[in-house]
Length: 91
View 1 (cartoon, rainbow, N blue to C red):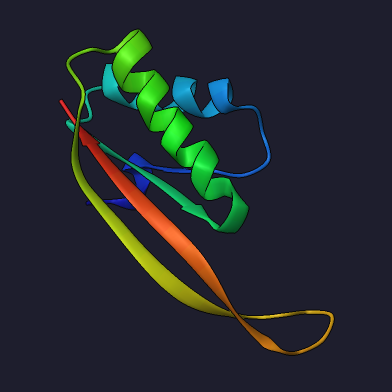
View 2 (cartoon, rainbow, N blue to C red):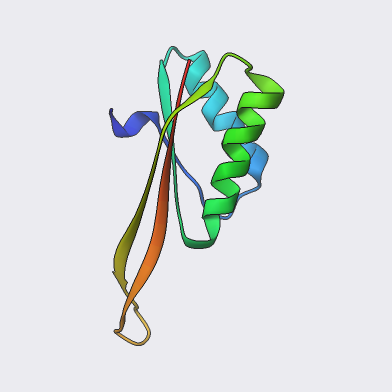
């Protein structure tokens, strides 16, 4: 899967990411990956649920990957474990 079919969840409102997913599907993508880390994981789940249940009922969750990444803090220099999730949606 190419990175162009990925939606990275950040600090924007949930509906911005839902619109991004729906736009990718409208432009011919067969699958879209929603990626998030840390506190944004709950927002990623919301994006997937809203896209599937409210807007595009033909979309299904194909796969979910969870992982832990080690990230070095800029302030302290310590290495922290950060949870991450990838939700693969497909038509």
